[in-house]
Image 1 (cartoon, one colour):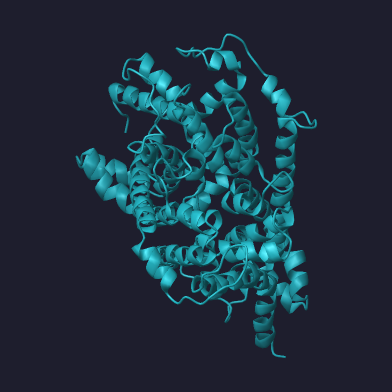
Image 2: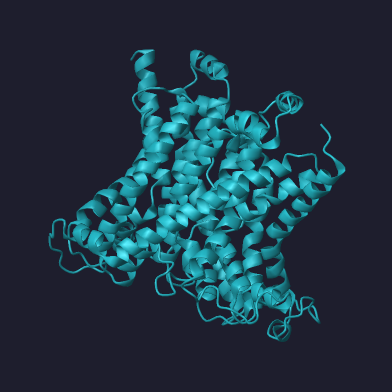
Length: 281
Length: 293
């Protein structure tokens, strides 16, 4: 069915408008990040900067005492630590649990519903005791404390995602391994996991994305550069008195870059997962 | 031990690590929240007294809490319905024969992957009352005579935040609908065309049945997510001006961590859980029906 020429032109105009809406906020950040402060604060605003100013990028990736580069890089370090730690803990616990839910149907099966419910539960329902527990254990303002509480988000999600991936793999080979006398763990490790390697990578990437984005816990349970993550550091700057908008935009772009790269990698999986209704926003 | 018995035991042992972690970081804290909610506990310790349902009674009678509930419901209704409408329209557009369709579709992932806090910050910079893009644009094309404080005005703040939230989340709806549209056989659409059905009729008869299920899942999921909204609000307005953007999560945070009233904060946190439980139950029901386990 070929649409008329007029309809086709209207369609393409709409698509271009859509692209403009998606790209505008990102383009604005790029513009702010490379404009000199003088250009940014001159009214009426000129949309094309008089000079290209890349000094903020240089400032943020340069580690030196009492600079904003140091604050940024420490927050980056904390974010990577918490993301890696949470992903590791969550995967180690989630893989056997997901396999159990997928293959060993039994009395534990109804717990999967509980796991999904926990994943959707508002953090406000447990945030007060978590604060007191972390405080009592001396884990406030530490990456380890954040790794623990971030597992409340990532672990249920990882179980769910891995379970649906195990479901998609035929179980005959595993059954054969059982019959041949291979133990349960040996079967999981040697037979099942090699078949779901791409799913493991996908789950890890989703986990990293989740932690990178996590704000409420990181905001409440940290207080300085020892554990504060990137989004908390930036949120405090943005909603506070930081007046160098170009610097904010630069930090924001650099922080958004890894998740966006991961998002592009995940796009294909995301779409097929969404078709089954299993992945959240 | 019998094979069946061994299997059952293995089933339990395999979920044991996850179960222990979940009980420790979710189960135990949840019980504690219930206990604390019946006390006048302070966040940083000191003596605690049993106060029964006083915290709950106070929350349900307080203008702060009810105002936050109202704001949350309004924000949820506006953003979720806008996301669904825009999301479906954009998906239908991207399903048409279009030059560069792959590029346009790929754009959808950008807002989805953008961290919420960075998105909030970029819109804060767009709305900036002194040097923001929106003011510059609107004054230069003559729509606005002078710069406005979009986030500083109680009349516009919530709407301004809603736009930022919709920008970030409608692409997810589009991706869901696009995925569902791939399951509609082309011949069906062609057949409807030949039968002389107009666009709206074709949408109703052929397309809507195919996307209704996934769309319902998306709507419930998004509603659950938006009911919890905290980060985008905190970064853009901190709940102001004059509490016009203070949502439930913001309210719980302020009660428990800014005012240090842990008991009262816990009771409000549980009330939020209560409100969302209905939605979560609905979601589980839909998912179970769609994928019989």
